[in-house]
Length: 189
Image 1 (cartoon, rainbow, N blue to C red):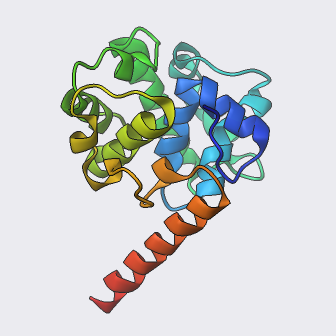
Image 2: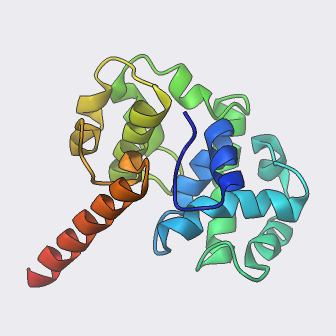
């Protein structure tokens, strides 16, 4: 299945077939619009002239990578910090998963293990790990035993809570409405 996020077709195609790009996008999905976070791996590949591997990013000169992230338009609101976090993510993948980002989920024996592995990734944490597990289960068919339960309410069938649920314009609108409702409720206290 091809992702159908509100970004360029080429960016959706990259995220669909490249697990490292998908992980970087999810890592970047904080304090920037969804469109920015999920299109940035495609922009990174364009700037580098190729799709980077985890090993390549792990060994990249930190100042040079920060400069690539900061090039206008910056890949994130905080380009230097996110370049460092992307490098930390790549190092973990290179060291723990032999450079194979997909091994994080392909070798997970259960949904609980999958979410625990994701939560250990730089820039993730428990909440984001659940969203990513739901994205994998709902849109990529990655469904180790107990994945829905491990993904929490994000794993619910028919929900519209996160990027895991975006498949078209209607679902995008539903997710945005849910997020707006949550923000309003939080402000109301």
